[in-house]
Length: 253
Image (cartoon, rainbow, N blue to C red):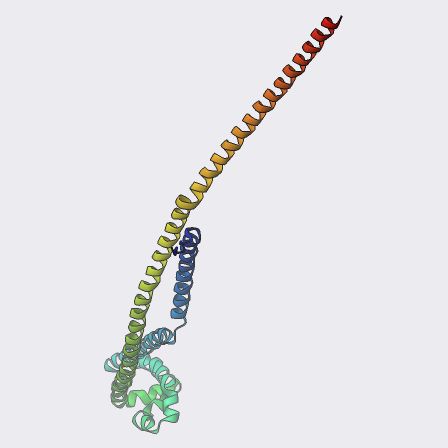
């Protein structure tokens, strides 16, 4: 009759234990790799960059907007001394636009009168307060018109990249589920393999070795007793032989 080969349980339990360890190590490795790739991901970096740009634009606009309001307030109250100290700052804030944009220069050419704050500027301002006030209010509107589109563009890009970032995070969550599952299975396989190997292989082997050692001790004890018996038997035989020889000599004499 054909006999089916038996499963090598020793190798099977070792395979489960080693396979479980490999799954655990792989889960930690791929999880760490994925986490590092997320930190260096271009989409994630782009979102951080847009956040920074957005904050810079808002801060810059807020400073300019508040400063323009201070100039308007000074001109409304005819506080020429304060306005003269404010207007050169406005000139330096927008001097690049005055140099490189003809449309800006056409609308805000009066800013060129405030390169400095000497006496001629004070005289000029006193005689042109109304015109300067209109120009500064237009500058406020201009700043709003510049600010709103920039913010809209940044917000739109940020929303797009945030959606991509959320998609990557969802993919990462799914990936983490697989990784966690593989890690848990690895732990179960390793524990099961180790426990079953101990119960089915190592423990019986240890018990068998103990039995063999006890049997060996018993055999050695029996051999020792047999050796004593053999020695005693030989001694008795020698004693009997001596006695028989002595008896034979007495009869002959």
